[in-house]
Length: 166
Ligand code: S3P
Image 1 (cartoon, rainbow, N blue to C red):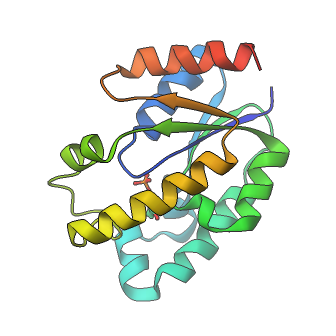
Image 2: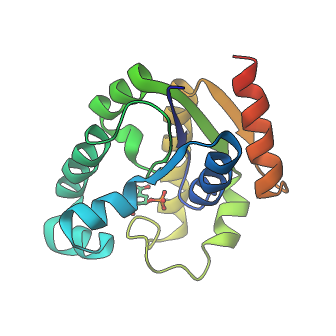
Protein backbone atom coordinates (compact mmCIF):
# COMPACT_ATOMS: atom_id res chain seq x y z
CA UNK A 1 0.00 0.00 0.00
CA UNK A 2 1.19 3.53 -0.73
CA UNK A 3 1.62 5.95 2.17
CA UNK A 4 -1.29 7.66 3.86
CA UNK A 5 -0.57 11.24 4.83
CA UNK A 6 -2.76 12.84 7.48
CA UNK A 7 -2.90 16.60 7.13
CA UNK A 8 -4.82 19.20 9.12
CA UNK A 9 -4.49 22.08 11.51
CA UNK A 10 -2.59 21.84 14.81
CA UNK A 11 -4.71 19.95 17.31
CA UNK A 12 -6.86 18.19 14.70
CA UNK A 13 -5.77 14.76 16.02
CA UNK A 14 -3.37 13.65 13.27
CA UNK A 15 -1.04 11.80 15.65
CA UNK A 16 -3.76 10.05 17.69
CA UNK A 17 -5.79 9.08 14.64
CA UNK A 18 -2.65 8.12 12.73
CA UNK A 19 -1.49 5.72 15.44
CA UNK A 20 -4.88 4.05 15.52
CA UNK A 21 -5.17 3.89 11.73
CA UNK A 22 -1.71 2.36 11.39
CA UNK A 23 -2.83 -0.42 13.77
CA UNK A 24 -6.01 -1.04 11.77
CA UNK A 25 -4.14 -1.19 8.48
CA UNK A 26 -1.06 -2.93 9.89
CA UNK A 27 1.24 -0.25 8.54
CA UNK A 28 4.12 1.58 10.19
CA UNK A 29 3.35 4.89 11.91
CA UNK A 30 5.52 7.99 11.51
CA UNK A 31 5.05 11.47 12.97
CA UNK A 32 7.07 14.10 11.08
CA UNK A 33 7.42 16.34 14.16
CA UNK A 34 8.95 13.45 16.14
CA UNK A 35 11.20 12.63 13.21
CA UNK A 36 12.43 16.24 13.08
CA UNK A 37 13.18 16.07 16.82
CA UNK A 38 15.11 12.82 16.30
CA UNK A 39 16.97 13.98 13.22
CA UNK A 40 18.00 17.36 14.65
CA UNK A 41 18.16 16.42 18.33
CA UNK A 42 16.28 19.67 19.05
CA UNK A 43 12.84 20.59 20.34
CA UNK A 44 10.47 22.16 17.84
CA UNK A 45 9.91 25.24 20.00
CA UNK A 46 13.70 25.72 20.22
CA UNK A 47 14.11 25.44 16.45
CA UNK A 48 11.48 28.16 15.95
CA UNK A 49 12.99 30.38 18.66
CA UNK A 50 16.66 29.99 17.74
CA UNK A 51 16.69 29.24 14.01
CA UNK A 52 13.34 30.55 12.79
CA UNK A 53 10.39 29.10 10.93
CA UNK A 54 12.12 28.86 7.56
CA UNK A 55 14.84 26.62 9.01
CA UNK A 56 12.12 24.49 10.60
CA UNK A 57 10.50 24.16 7.16
CA UNK A 58 13.81 22.92 5.74
CA UNK A 59 14.08 20.28 8.46
CA UNK A 60 10.46 19.33 7.78
CA UNK A 61 11.10 18.83 4.06
CA UNK A 62 14.21 16.75 4.81
CA UNK A 63 12.26 14.61 7.28
CA UNK A 64 9.45 13.98 4.79
CA UNK A 65 11.89 13.16 2.00
CA UNK A 66 13.68 10.64 4.23
CA UNK A 67 10.56 8.49 4.70
CA UNK A 68 9.80 5.25 2.90
CA UNK A 69 7.30 5.89 0.12
CA UNK A 70 5.20 2.81 0.94
CA UNK A 71 3.40 1.20 3.84
CA UNK A 72 3.41 4.11 6.30
CA UNK A 73 0.72 6.18 7.94
CA UNK A 74 2.30 9.61 8.32
CA UNK A 75 1.04 12.25 10.75
CA UNK A 76 2.34 15.53 9.37
CA UNK A 77 2.87 18.92 11.02
CA UNK A 78 0.10 21.44 10.37
CA UNK A 79 2.37 23.54 8.15
CA UNK A 80 3.54 20.74 5.85
CA UNK A 81 1.43 22.14 2.99
CA UNK A 82 3.23 25.48 3.13
CA UNK A 83 6.12 23.99 1.12
CA UNK A 84 5.21 22.98 -2.45
CA UNK A 85 7.92 20.26 -2.56
CA UNK A 86 6.23 18.54 0.39
CA UNK A 87 2.89 18.52 -1.39
CA UNK A 88 4.50 17.00 -4.49
CA UNK A 89 6.23 14.35 -2.38
CA UNK A 90 2.98 13.39 -0.64
CA UNK A 91 0.96 13.36 -3.87
CA UNK A 92 3.37 11.11 -5.69
CA UNK A 93 3.84 8.63 -2.85
CA UNK A 94 0.37 8.26 -1.38
CA UNK A 95 -3.07 9.47 -0.45
CA UNK A 96 -3.61 12.73 1.40
CA UNK A 97 -6.31 12.67 4.08
CA UNK A 98 -7.52 15.89 5.70
CA UNK A 99 -8.78 15.84 9.27
CA UNK A 100 -11.31 18.65 9.09
CA UNK A 101 -11.73 20.13 12.57
CA UNK A 102 -13.54 23.35 13.43
CA UNK A 103 -11.71 26.38 14.81
CA UNK A 104 -13.83 26.14 17.96
CA UNK A 105 -12.77 22.56 18.68
CA UNK A 106 -9.12 23.37 17.97
CA UNK A 107 -9.30 26.40 20.27
CA UNK A 108 -10.75 24.32 23.10
CA UNK A 109 -8.15 21.58 22.67
CA UNK A 110 -5.18 23.90 22.48
CA UNK A 111 -6.36 26.42 25.08
CA UNK A 112 -3.54 25.64 27.53
CA UNK A 113 -0.98 24.59 24.91
CA UNK A 114 2.26 26.57 24.94
CA UNK A 115 4.35 24.09 22.95
CA UNK A 116 3.24 25.15 19.48
CA UNK A 117 4.96 28.38 18.45
CA UNK A 118 2.45 29.22 15.72
CA UNK A 119 -0.51 28.75 18.06
CA UNK A 120 1.05 30.93 20.72
CA UNK A 121 -0.29 34.20 19.29
CA UNK A 122 -3.38 36.37 19.53
CA UNK A 123 -6.77 34.94 18.60
CA UNK A 124 -7.18 36.96 15.40
CA UNK A 125 -3.82 35.70 14.13
CA UNK A 126 -4.71 32.11 15.04
CA UNK A 127 -7.95 32.46 13.10
CA UNK A 128 -6.24 33.99 10.09
CA UNK A 129 -3.74 31.12 9.96
CA UNK A 130 -6.58 28.61 10.31
CA UNK A 131 -8.54 30.08 7.40
CA UNK A 132 -5.47 30.22 5.16
CA UNK A 133 -4.40 26.69 6.03
CA UNK A 134 -7.85 25.14 5.61
CA UNK A 135 -7.99 26.47 2.08
CA UNK A 136 -4.64 24.86 1.29
CA UNK A 137 -5.58 21.56 2.94
CA UNK A 138 -8.82 21.35 0.98
CA UNK A 139 -6.98 21.97 -2.29
CA UNK A 140 -4.61 19.05 -1.77
CA UNK A 141 -6.69 16.43 0.06
CA UNK A 142 -7.84 13.24 -1.69
CA UNK A 143 -10.16 12.48 1.23
CA UNK A 144 -11.73 14.88 3.75
CA UNK A 145 -13.00 13.56 7.08
CA UNK A 146 -14.95 15.69 9.57
CA UNK A 147 -13.71 15.05 13.07
CA UNK A 148 -15.80 17.28 15.37
CA UNK A 149 -17.50 15.19 18.06
CA UNK A 150 -16.10 11.90 16.68
CA UNK A 151 -13.91 9.43 18.53
CA UNK A 152 -10.43 8.52 17.34
CA UNK A 153 -11.66 5.00 16.56
CA UNK A 154 -14.59 6.27 14.50
CA UNK A 155 -12.38 8.63 12.49
CA UNK A 156 -9.79 5.92 11.81
CA UNK A 157 -12.52 3.50 10.70
CA UNK A 158 -14.03 6.10 8.41
CA UNK A 159 -10.64 6.76 6.79
CA UNK A 160 -10.12 3.03 6.29
CA UNK A 161 -13.45 2.56 4.53
CA UNK A 162 -12.99 5.70 2.42
CA UNK A 163 -9.56 4.45 1.33
CA UNK A 164 -11.11 1.14 0.29
CA UNK A 165 -13.52 3.01 -1.96
CA UNK A 166 -10.89 5.25 -3.55
C1 S3P B 1 3.08 23.63 12.88
C2 S3P B 1 2.43 22.56 13.45
C3 S3P B 1 3.08 21.68 14.43
C4 S3P B 1 4.61 21.68 14.24
C5 S3P B 1 5.12 23.09 14.25
C6 S3P B 1 4.51 23.94 13.14
C7 S3P B 1 2.34 24.48 11.92
O1 S3P B 1 2.60 20.34 14.29
O2 S3P B 1 4.95 21.05 13.04
O3 S3P B 1 4.87 23.63 15.52
O4 S3P B 1 2.98 25.23 11.16
O5 S3P B 1 1.09 24.41 11.88
P1 S3P B 1 1.13 19.87 14.73
O6 S3P B 1 0.20 20.16 13.58
O7 S3P B 1 1.28 18.41 14.97
O8 S3P B 1 0.76 20.61 15.96
